[in-house]
Image 1 (cartoon, rainbow, N blue to C red):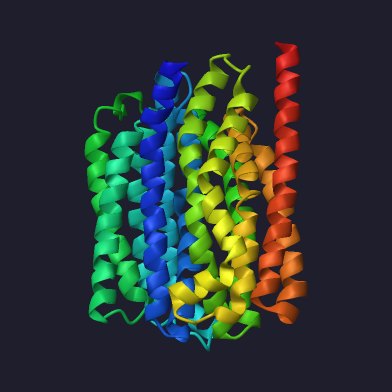
Image 2 (cartoon, one colour):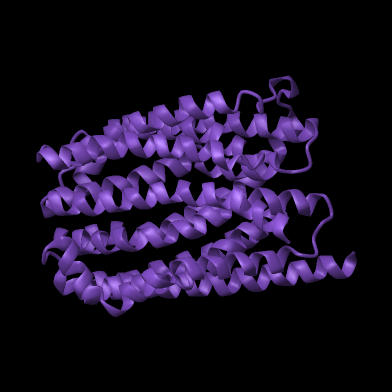
Length: 421
């Protein structure tokens, strides 16, 4: 038992630090919200959504295939699958970056009230450098090298956070493009360090082959569907607020999301370890403890995030007043709603990862698709009437419905497999 606790600490603590660097970036995002006027911050929020969508289509949906297939029982076939996933990721990142460069000007006409001039070329750079940074990062995670990943994540934060922090300190931050350029430099720094650390893991001699390509594309197809639907239900609120509500609503909603995003990072840290470890155990026939391990992970997540959640739910108005100096104070219910939702998120997040590790990525896809449908429908109904508060309630309904569905499907599949065994 002591050995198991030591393993959890050695793997889990670096993963938590990695995600903690993203949480620290969430703090800087709060400072960005305070520094920029509403129209500039609305442009930043929309640029972040476009960046995330570009990153998803630019190979992000293949990265889970790299993590899953590269984590299986080590052999030449596993290495070939990892090599193929890396190549496919790179190809998609180049294609999407080119598309952004060709058609990015249309964004200006779609959002005429929000200043987006000159943003899409920089987003294209973020997409391609982000893919470059994440390819060796995910390959390291297939070997559970969370300590090495942690170092690169810290470097990335220091570069991006240092540049943007200095701009905020000197009063020189004026728009989203400066933040995106800092992100490009951070991605390049992480890529160089991750590439150096992964040099002993990468096995080019295994090559790529048609069988590996078929496996990667089959898994990635579900990942794309899952990620795309997930993007719909996590970012549609921002995009629809930008179209259906004034810039002030977009800024207020984004400010509340910046505060609650730091809590979500705890689940992401758990998934960094859970995906490769469950995948390896599952393909090796060690399946009995999968659900118990998943519930323990959820329990640990809840224990870590509970004090923050209580503060967000009980004192939302005071927190907004303190952090934003009175800006967005009338939107405090958004923070309370999204803060309370943090208690439900780990169930969907963990079991989506577990279903993929059990070779059932379609479960996550179906359930995220359900969530996306719920979210878009309720956004259309509630945003015109309630603005950001309506978007928050739509997110609650989407997250809870998806979490219940993916838990049910994953546990049912595990029980079937255990009966067969």
